Amino acid sequence: MKRVTLLMMVFMLLFVSSVYGEELKVKNIELIPNTTVSVGSKINLNIVVVYDDENSIHSDNDPYYRRNTGLTKTDYTISEPHILQVLSTGMVKVIGVGSSTITVKVENVERSVTISGSLDEAIDGGYIKNGVTLVPMKEVFKALGGSISYIAQQDAFEIKVGSTKLTLPKTGTKATLNGEPLTLKSPLLVQNGVTLFPASVLSDALDGTVTYNSKAKQMQVSIGKGKMTINIEQPQKQNSVTGTTPTKGKLYAVPATGDMKGWSILKGHPYEKSIRVYFKINGSNVQIYTKDIRKVDLNKKVTWTDLEGKKHTNTVKQLYTVFGELSNEYTSDILYKMFGKTYSDWIGSTSLNADRYVDQYLEQQGLIEPYGSNITLTPDTEVY
Image (cartoon, rainbow, N blue to C red; front, side, top):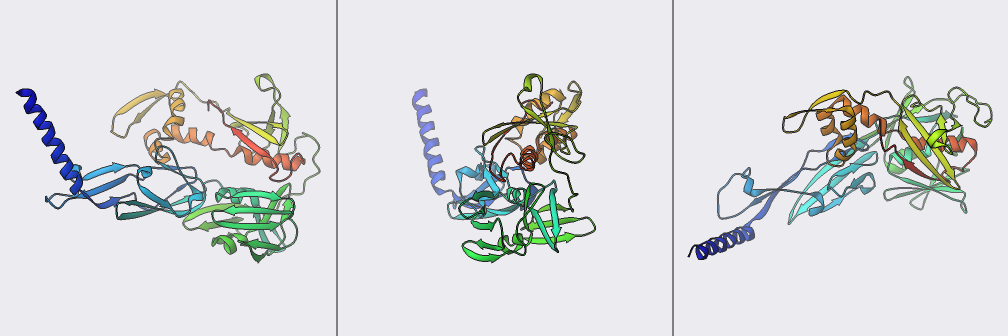
C-alpha cells in the first residue's frame, strides 16, 4: 500500500511539474551591464532567464521563476565576432580592441550587452614623416583582432579586420577598401625592419577616432569605446646589424646554454630583467619559450578571501600553480578582487607579447621577410 501511495505521489509531482513547465513563459532576460575591459579579459555574462505563468501571482525574485543559463545554451549573435571568443566554459574572452554587442535570445525575448576591449600596454614604433603619422602594421592590426598576409603576386599586404578587407601596396599609395579604391596619405614605410602604415587608414577604413597628443608623443585610437595608445617617436639612426653584437636600446640574441642549448636568448627588450625569452628557428617556423626569472618568495604565505567571504591561506607557489586553471573559470577582475597583488604579479609575468619582440628582431636581422614566419609561442609551464 505504501509503495502504491509513493508511486501516486511521484506521478502527481511529475504531472504538476509538467503542467507548470508548459505554462511557464520567458518574461525577461537579465545580463551584466555594458562594460569595458582589458584585451585578454574573460567575462561571465551571468545570464538569468526570468519566467512567468498565468496561473499565479509571484515576485520576479522568486527562485522558481529565475534560471541561470550559459551563453551557449541560448540563441545568441555577436555583432563583431572577431574581437570576442566564446570559450567552452560559456565565458567570453576579449581578444581585440573595439566594441561588440552580444544579443541573447530565449524564446521570443531578446536582450543585448555591449562589451568593449581596450589595450593596457601602449604600442611602440609610431613615426612621423613629412607631416604624416605612421604606425606599426603588425602590432596595430593584431590588437584590433585582424590578420595580415603578404600577397607576392600583388606585392601588397592583405588585411582583414572582421568584415573589412584592406589591401595596402608595398610601394605607392593606391590601396583598396573592400574592393573599392582608397588613396593613402603616404606610402608604407619600413623603419628598422618594422612596416608602418598611415594612421589615417584607421579612421578611413574602420571608423576609428584618432587623436594625437604632441606633448606626450602618443596617439590614441578609439574603436567604439575600445581604446589603444601608440607611442610616436622618431627612431634614432642605427648602424647596420653586426651579428649578435649588443647595442644599447637594440634587440640582439645570445646562445642559450644548459637545458636550453640550441635555443637563442633574446636581449634588449624592456622586460629582460623579469622575463627570459628563448627562441629557435626551424625553417620558416619560429618557436618561442618564455620563463619568469624574477626572484619570488614562493614560500611566502598569502591570506585571501573567496567569493563567499571565507578566508584561506596558501603559499605563493600554490597560488601560482592554480591561477592558470582559475583564469578559465573566473574573470581577471574577480581573481584580482580575491588575490590582489599576488594575482597581478602573476598575470603581469604571463602577458608579455614575446612574439612581438622576436619577430621584430628577426626582421631586423633579415632572417625573415615581414609576416613571412609562422611563430609558435610556448609560454613557460612554471611562471616562477
